[in-house]
Length: 123
Image 1 (cartoon, rainbow, N blue to C red):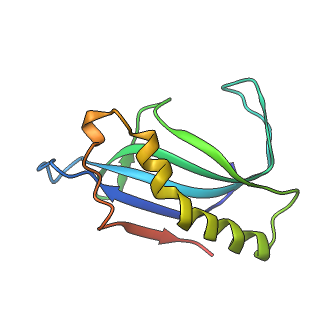
Image 2 (image 1 turned 45 degrees about the horizontal axis):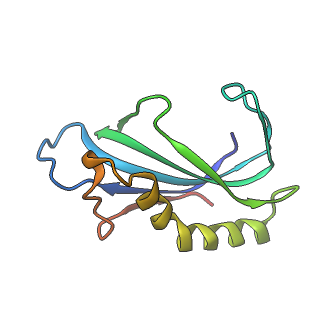
Image 3 (image 1 turned 90 degrees about the vertical axis):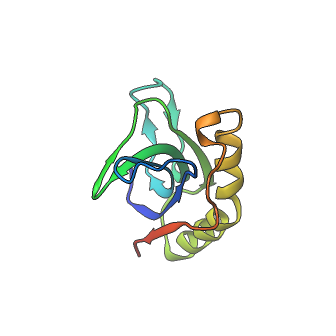
């Protein structure tokens, strides 16, 4: 997997436990593509948005395998500053809808707090 450009964490409401709080992690990254060892399928080269339920305790982040999803957002032959900007714009416009769709029907994640995100960017 390539380097991650942007990560957004959304807290999940209704959990009082200060330690091991559930969050939704949504990230944008570039992948060189190739063979996926898990699915056995080839992957396209480009920018992907990934969504996963995580628990955070201080600087530790835990997740359960096979509970995440990812979508090809922008297919491209190689990475460039222009493509980075285009992918970041697409991420900002679409990631909340992807999160809503991904967690639709999952009662533990029905109250995602989209108003209070924690954003981490790497340029």
